Amino acid sequence: MSGSVSSAALEETYRESLDSERHFRNKRILHIGSESYDAQTVAVCQGLDRLGFEIYVPVKPNINSWFCNKVIRNPRQYKFDFVLSSLHWGTRWSHYGRYGLWHYPKVLIDGDDNMPGDTWRTKFDRYLKAYKFNPPNEVKALELAPYRWVESLDGYRPDVVFALAKYPGAYYIPKGLQHQWLDQNGSKTIMARGIDFCHVPGQGAWRRAMSALLALGVLPGIIHNESVRGKPAYPTTWVRSMAERDAGVHSWDRWAMYMDFYRVLDDTRVLIHPGIDHWPFWEARRIYEGWACGCLVAMSTPTVDVSEYPPTGVCPEAVYASHEELISKGKFWYENPDILDSLAVQSAARARRYFSPVAVARYFLKRVHDAI
Image 1 (cartoon, one colour):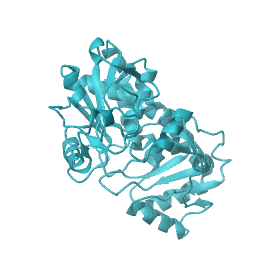
Image 2 (tube, rainbow, N blue to C red; image 1 turned 135 degrees about the vertical axis):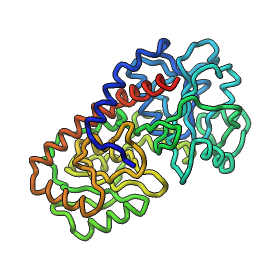
Image 3 (cartoon, rainbow, N blue to C red; image 1 turned 30 degrees about the vertical axis):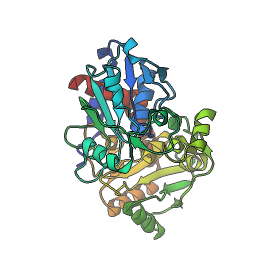
Image 4 (cartoon, helix red, strand yellow; image 1 turned 60 degrees about the vertical axis):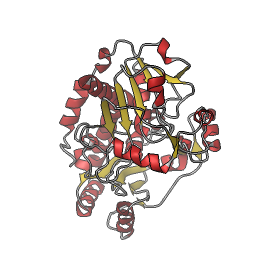
């Protein structure tokens, strides 16, 4: 289901999206977003900000656009190009009617985990049962909520949908290379790094299987095959305070960057990503963090459709379909360090070209423009 893994397909999509910001006259967006951390929305907002768009939010800052959003009281006083929302919980669907926003194009980012057959609507219906329904406005106005809550859709239907795990009627949207990850890139060349292959264990059967496989010594050289975190670093002291005060409701802790982990990546030649199989999912921020730190990322063939803007196109040579193929490629790279170095350097350059926040935002804008 991965579609073409060629870098040519990725380049074509990238070029088609260049200068897509020209289609939006006002350069203003109203963000009525989820109150839960969403990596795709963060990357899009970072890119829109760099492209000169003003991002407005009603009443209070949002966890996914706090770094650039302008808090306003009355959206009726402004003219926007479209209204951007994201799924999970805390999205103020009632704002659409309250402020007379129904005439604007409605863009939805669905970055949530999928169950088989899921769409944004089936997920929302599940959240209606899982979270508190329509709490008092005093709770909705809090920067840090005591629990997760949802409102009625109130007639909301998106005109354009983006999803990390694509389904019919939605465009694929990648996590992208957020600026704070790009800033972690160290100075070590591939040749100067001390870890040949790195796998950081995590949830899911595929990650457990990879940990067990590497423990058998199937790959040569120095292997890192254990968890690593270290102390968290945050973009600002305010974000740190939000994370420390958040009781796991908003997931402000996902803004954290664990510096021991980045030090390992900065000393890694090949980072292995076996994919995420907990639900129909595959992508993880670890792919992008690896590229940001200059690693060659060996990734399993995607189990979801990423063909519209394929991360696999960054380095098709590093995509593997089986453990046997990974072992074969790993041994080849170990025995041919010049080729490994060339692939890693090429991958880092392509990742920054195709998956920087600006590139992702232009891809996003192109799809929005085409749809509306």
